[in-house]
Image (cartoon, rainbow, N blue to C red; front, side):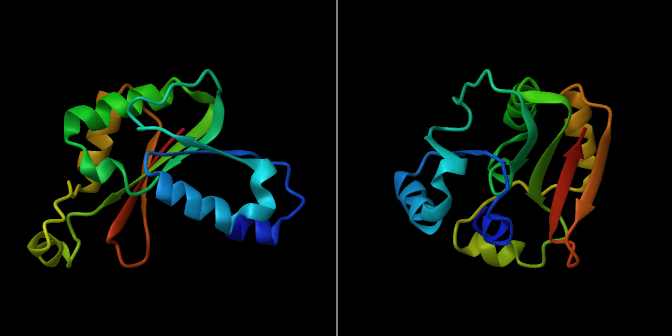
Length: 147
């Protein structure tokens, strides 16, 4: 958000951010202090967050990797109910092709690494049909795109 607003200071966009760690919110607020009129921080657990707002874009990175498939589908359905018609959901998830997985697990960082096919399957299980999978150049991080 900070980089976006630094490049587009007059943008009329608004971001709602959900984070359960107050320290992380405090840090983000300090970083984005010049753009706070365009950002609302909600100190909430994403699974408990409720909103009647319909969003054009829902972006989640660094969250769904922690969920088993059942919770993944549950939250994805919930986010779908908050999506504006024609809007898009983007979910980041570590790929099964992550060369650092074993190293991460030595330090007790256990995540649900998923393949593109698994992400598509989970999105279909949540009731979505317009599904694509993207990835960053190294292929370590996948991005589930749902329109």
